[in-house]
Length: 145
Image 1 (cartoon, rainbow, N blue to C red):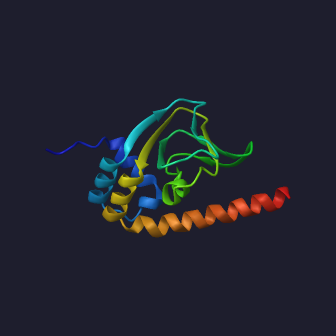
Image 2: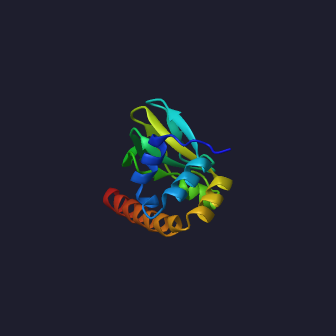
């Protein structure tokens, strides 16, 4: 039996640069792996220092990424967060708070592993994005110091 994937989920994934090289078949596979999660405005999605084993893709809404009370980034449709803790099993490096109601696609560690098998092009793009975020964080720390 085939599972019907909502258009907004496929459309949301199509906007994510991370998935830009994926075929329609791969996007459908990605959508079946993640769990759609509605988030209320003001809710803390991740908390710095706490364990984390999930990775989130923003389908709609906006969130603020904060470290020690300072906003470092803002996430909107097509963005993702939580990959560092998912990959290394360490604590969250930042808190992410919903600024508006959001729709996220949540991947746990096993779903993420299957995602990399279904859409291997994601790995290179994720590493590139992680490197960019690290450089931005380093620059932000240098400005504060």
